[in-house]
Amino acid sequence: MSAFRIGEKAAPKPHPPRPDHDLSQRLAHAPIRMDHAAFRKMTRGKLKPEGRIDLHGMTLSQAHPVLTRFILDAHDAGKRLVLVITGKGKDRDTPDPIPIRRGVLRHQVPMWLHMPPLGAVVLDIREAHQRHGGGGAYYVYLKKPR
Image (cartoon, rainbow, N blue to C red; front, side):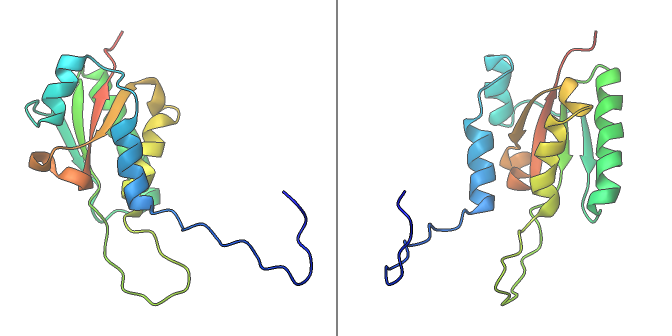
């Protein structure tokens, strides 16, 4: 890349990423780490979650420990598929120059599920089927307890 010179026209800025679209695409195109037959059933909404947690209305600081405890307890109980409901987030019609991300919990939960201590017990994460909440919920497929 050459240096900018006075009088030159600046290069156009790339379009800002669409976080909602990017998250869905990343989860949909992530490699499958679970049994393919179970994955097919899960994505069609045919597998019934063995547990569920609803994080609606919680702040990030409230939701993180609640989610951690729920996932670890579900794993200890031998559950394989649980449903984590985050909601899609509120629409904000603010004319601010800095865009506000819609659905803070919706974006944080997948990251929390990949980080320790939950990353050690979580096998796969996918957006839920419309029957179980669609884009406002996640299927979390847990590893077999040892």
